[in-house]
Length: 483
Image (cartoon, rainbow, N blue to C red):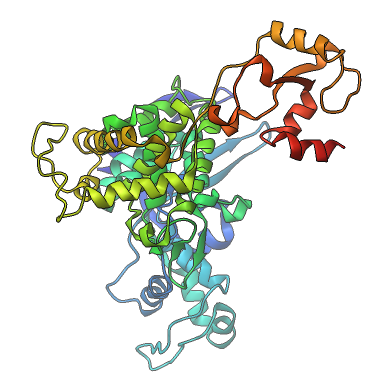
């Protein structure tokens, strides 16, 4: 059945030899995987996140050494023929079975020991031994591990795209994969960025974004920055949260998100001709959003952190980002305080503010907190309508600072440059006009009410270097720095 999935096709390699894609049932020994073959069993597209705990790994070794009717489930290996002018050799990719295989190879690398007690049918107690000790004391058992054969399907001459489709569309049918595990298997720049940003890559010294920093707790991981203490189940919850955030940001987040369109989008944008085929062009924008989200979640009062479920946190960030885009600045602590005041007031069964209110779909609205159980159009737009209503009552309570987002004209900069006797405002040194830029004396980040406007009286001319160093510093602070 698996073989029928892969269409046979003819293709020429760079030396003109035609090849045909095939799949073959067979077996593979642990020795072949561990010592003989050039096999990559760490391709992250085909990993479901490292969720195998010590009990699982030790259980695999018990199965190998006890024998009997129990067997390690079948694995799937891609064969890659590498042809040179003088030779042909093969490399391999483990497409499915990473946790099973790495449990065995991990033991052989002395990463863990056998369980205690572990008494074999012949009475030997090998509990607590690592691979080196087992090899020294019971070499026949060590050899038994190396010679153990695992049922395997070999795939020859299939492309990266075919391999991903095999993992997603065929192996998925029997392996209970979550939608995000399917999206993770799609090969491309966005999937790589999403995976690396959400959980990092220890082997490549890539750290996750600070919003998703973790710490070990023995048999799992916990998110510890800005979130409630939550034990991850190892099924790509964080990758899913991040991928949904990007999808919602790109598709108008008030339209909601559902699994099938989300998965189709992840596939389409990374295929040949797709929007992100050669570059994840929205990377900077998304990193800015995550940095902003980090500041927001960090500012949430401890009393409310337990309410930061995935939907609550996404709405918290995306609604604030809309405010920042519209007005220029949002003060995190004030905003999150106002957000959760609305959350409490409109969820209160005593006040019942929702009693005479219709939801977006025209039905009777329920308690505000119940709206976060889904990510559909009705839930999101009902939430936003309540937030908009409260925002209109007191915009300042939400930490909104209105900032003038226009820029000085070249004519204004030239006039001020001449008024300054062609000198840098901050240093007093001569300044060529081609090196001159307009600077807000009172930074725009201070907001219109405090004078951070794009008007001539708030313009000074300085060098590009000084302007970048000054950034959002107030005049007094920067004068001390350049004095």
